[in-house]
Structures are given as structure tokens and as C-alpha cells.
Length: 479
Image (cartoon, rainbow, N blue to C red; front, side):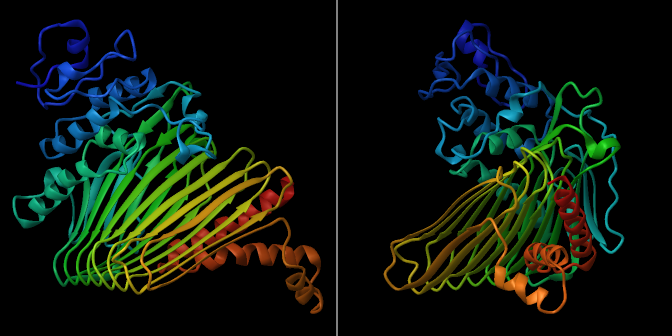
């Protein structure tokens, strides 16, 4: 028998018996109603009305997927006690105004996707999402979880999805995705298999609601598993498709990555959403002994963009390299990166570079946390953030921090925020006959290109560089 619904707990109505056995999000008359009747153990008080309303919509639209039931059930229970985050109530959102997500009613995509974004012609393996719905997954070691045949790969993927239910750093957006995801796209690379030269191109296209009176929410989910000694490269692209670059919508993707012993994952992520879109993304990474994870992010689109990047080193001699570039080129645009790297084992190595250009009345946020715990001796960790404010109305809030408990480490961090380019660099150009405007354009372009050039796939790199140049030109004209 399925557990009683929230409505049943509040109104003493008969139990509902319908698979899958998930909690139902029926809003009670009072936010303080207990859900203890919905669980044998005492449960915390019910969250606010907005969270319940969205969760109920997601649950009603989710297709039956038995392999996702453990994750859905855990997130359903979590949402019952999770309030909507605000700048006053939640420290993690102190600098991030997400009120835009409440500006319009939430709608959900149709069961049949309207869009079919094309993959890169250079990618033999690809995954296509349209408004959060998995359209296709083709190529070597790529499949939808529901379509995987019985065997080692399916069992491994199902176990990893079920283990995600225990993720302790989740927030309301992670749980929304878990409840609303219709399927999981899986990239499974067997032991010793090398796919570094054949990147998996993961395309996310979003079209938004048709009437413009609501914010269409989508919850795509991807799982990447690189087994012992394997190597894989993945390229994520998120963009609006259709008239007006997709219009108004809310993209809420989650990507979980498992890097086993001696494996290597190269991860490139490009976000160029519609100017009216909201983008809240989670990326979680688990690295085992002697593994390598290399990440490059370029985010220029969306009115609200928040990326939660959570990485945990689970073995010694592990390497993590992170590079991110954000550009707020439009007024009231928000770019937020919250990263956390946890080191628990000896001889870990990490480098993090964050760069940001804020124009107009844009707002940039960086909260980077590196935890070097007691047994992470001989750790070598470095973190650096550099920000340029090109307008007196632009705002940047940075919080780089190292938490070090181990006593035999080499760790550094630094933060630089400037409203002007280096006069020595401008003088260098002028001394060679280059005018100030051309010199300024070149320096701003190279500021972002330092990160973009780290994308190891030329078509994606060239596209990102061209867009950076275009956005800087438009921003300069508007300013």
C-alpha cells in the first residue's frame, strides 16, 4: 500500500493506492500542518505554499519510472520541509535575488517535445533534450536509463541514481529536478575505455511557453559514469530555440558525474539562454583515487543564472581543475556560481579560476568554498577570482574561502575586483600605435578568452568566442 497523501494526513481521507509510492503534495489549509501521518516517523513541518504547488505540478506530470522511485521519494519528502529560499532566510542566497522565479505562474512542457535541437555534426555520440524531455540518446555508451537493457551498465546506473537520494547538500532546485525528471540520460564508459577524442555532445534546447503568460519549467537530468581507467569528454550546451531565442522559461537541469579510480572526465559547459530565461543548475562530481576532473564553464545568457557545483574527492592523489567565465551583458542580469570542493584524502590537487565581467546594472556572485579536511595532508589547492566592473551600476559579490584543518598543505587564494583595465596594459597598446578603444576591446576579449580557450573542442570554442565578441560590442554600444 502506498503511503498516505499529504491531503490524507490533513483531512483524514482514505488512503490513495496508486503507483509509484511517492508522497502527494496537496496543500493544507495551514503551513504548520504536520505530515507525521504520511510517514511512520515524525516529519518536520510542511514547507510554504509555493514549493508545494510546484512540487504537486511536477509530480502530476512525471511519467512512471520505477528506477527513479528511490530518488523521487527522497526528494518528495525533503520538499515537504523545504521553504522557498530568500535573501533573508537562506545564507546561500544572501546575494542572489531569485524573485524573478515568482514573477509568473509555472507551467510544464507538453509530453511530446516541440523542439528538436540538432547535435554537432562533429559528435558521433549525442544526447538531445527539448524543453527538458529526452528526445534521443545515440552513440557509443550513451542511452536513456529507461531503455538500457538488463546488465552491468543498467545496474550501475540505477544504483547511482538511487544513491543520489542520499545527497546531503541538496536544495529546493535539486529536489524539484528529482521529482520532475521524466528520465535520465546516461553516459556509461566501461573500464579502460578511452573516449577523449569522441566527445559526447549534450544539447539542451528550450522554447518557453507559447502564450508568454507563464514560465515553462523543465527538469532534464544526466548521469555520467567513467569506470576505472576510463576517459570521456562531454560538452553541454544550453540555449533558447525559436522566435526571440526561446522567450521566457525556467531551465532546472542536474548533471551527476562519477569518476572512478584512475579515470578522467573533461567537462565543457556553455550556457547561452534566452535573455528572459531563468537557469538554475546543479553539477555534482564524485572523484575516486588518482582520478582527474577538468571543468570549463562559459555562461553569458539568461536573466537569472545560478550554478551549484559540488565536487568531492573520495581518494588520494586526485586532480580537480575548474575554470569559469561569466558575462552580465544586460541590465538586471544575475550570474551566480556557488562551488564547493571537499578534500578528505592525501595529496589532492586542485586549481580554480573564476572570471567575471559585469556591465550595465548586472550582478555577479561567486561563492567558492574549498574544504581541506584533517586527513587531506600534502594538499595543493589554489583558488583565484578576477572581476571587471564596466559600469557604475554593476555589482559584484565575491566570497572565495579556504577552510583548512590539515597542517601539511600548500593552499592559496586571491580575489581582484576592478573598475578599470590595467593602465600599463593600455599604455603597451598605445605605445605601439593602437588607439584606446581598440586596445580596450582587445583586453576585454582576452579577459574572457583565457577561459574560453580552455574548451578542448574547436567548434564549441569558436562559437563561444564569437558570441563573447558580439556581446561585448553590444554592451559597449549600450553603455
